[in-house]
Image (cartoon, rainbow, N blue to C red; front, side, top):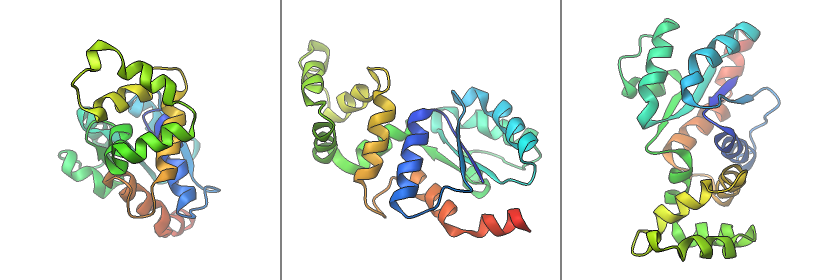
Length: 189
């Protein structure tokens, strides 16, 4: 099984979610694409290296058309974003970090940030005039991506903080697919 995700932060969240559910990653290859615009190349590489593999993934709603086109080019009769889950592709509204923050809520997200020792840095961001009066969730989302490596660190930690069943829908559906085991039988088939 190959799981294509946009970036390293998405990969960290998927890994953390899978481990949290007890899903073995021994036969699952989670591949960050370096952005969804690389999906055609990533699909081609996946099938070139492992022709029998099932390839699934996550994408953001704003870029789902890119995935739709790439899947159609590979012979999948995808009409629109509503068809993507049938092919193992799950769509985040804005991005996975926003989905994780929404699933946890601000209080639990702040606790994760505190556990990571990042509260002082968050306070610095929140003290900037452009964040005055804006929703905390927006600031938390921005905070995830303002420093190198932070997005990946926080995505994994936020996913770990969720319990089974609390995951945002796109991540939950992807983990359900991975946890079903049906794909392993098809690949061995």
